[in-house]
Length: 127
Image 1 (cartoon, rainbow, N blue to C red):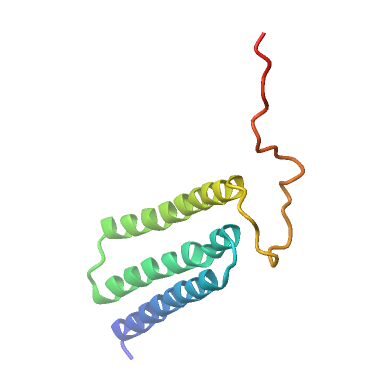
Image 2 (cartoon, rainbow, N blue to C red):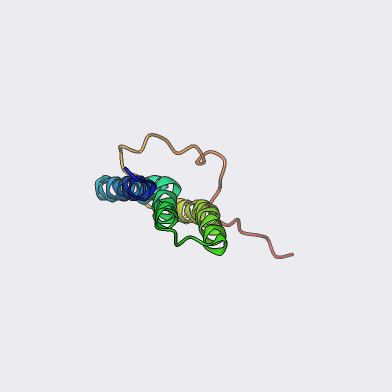
């Protein structure tokens, strides 16, 4: 088995594994009962699925001999940016879902922020 064939096999497995993370995430999103749980279910796809697909594409290009240094840098930046942006975005989505005060699914175990965060704006005396 040549290096090109091994590289294509590894690339295919990485992309297939990344796609599996997306499929599991989609099933989890369908089974979630509230917005907080849905935001939490995005983690496998954004944290593992997308980087695996990008790395699989890089391995495929490397095994075909089409990978340039610039392409490797772009892939590394894409993985880093995806991880940074997804963590900030999921934090903002979860915060807005919590602040909307929608009813939580009974399967959601706890609301740890409830005793500490007051969502109502206090009325100020105009003096």
